[in-house]
Image (cartoon, rainbow, N blue to C red; front, side, top):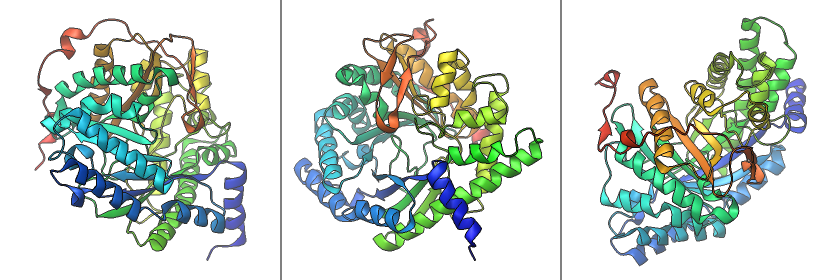
Length: 454
């Protein structure tokens, strides 16, 4: 039985400590839409999304109202479009028509974002994959709600360096085409290693081919709740610290489980997973960096940061996994710079560099996320940053990702405003030494020796 103390405790988490359900994401398979007629394919896609997702936003709003739990975003993820459009699309421009159809469908059903304008190329690219990747700059410049991702590596397959090299150019082109919005298009593009099939978070969400026809995935978030809990045990030993994080993560995840089951029941769609990631926002008191400071660091980036983040990530997973039937997605602690006020403060203080962030990605939930870099950064340098991060994921058998934003016309020390959940960020310096000869080699980096486990 739930007692009155637990009810009051949850209410306090919501009203005072920024607890929310960050997203309900409805995954929709578009495999049944496939045809070699482009016009018919677009019609099939639009009809399926607007039919399956017609009640998603209303259902989320009803659950918010009845349970008093904020649900910040209602989103859709779809089957990677490179697979769906492979038969009908004979050019990058053909794929752009699908992006526009997805955008139109997202607007019709009222969701915040739609993810899945994606390609999975960890071992090599088909012509359709390459067409889609080359279409990304135009697709993101001409749509409002579509998000894109490309998986270029995995522990089993290695890293497709041809795709990594191409994406350096694609990210710069996306920045250029959206420069009037401070290169915002790059905030809707993420490059993955070991991308999960059931991630509810944008920009990386897509509906994996191993999933059911439709599925409900939920992402919860409670950095403020964890920070408040740790403030009560300030100065205590590591055992007390770990136990506090675990208990708090359990409570936060139970809220996500409740929302996921209720949304599943009302929509008549199977419940997939709860992603128990600590996802920050620019709001004061809703910061993963502040948790690290509460653990004992002056700023995120100080010596001990990687160890503190590893502890936090592990205890969040240990507590959360006991609170839900199915935990999946990314799960852990996100460290996006522009979306976390504590991270922004650390960058401005000189405590946090790109190199330290890269080290932290070895133990965090994802990778180099929402980092603004100078607009004159070379494409090969961006590819080198991607390759480094993919190698971390490949060797450590974890998901890693890169979402960097070269802001055209701006340089180190300037600030870029994205607005909303995307926040704002100081532009960070990038190592200017060349990796051209490395990036311009052809082929792929082989899988590590520990991948051979059949």
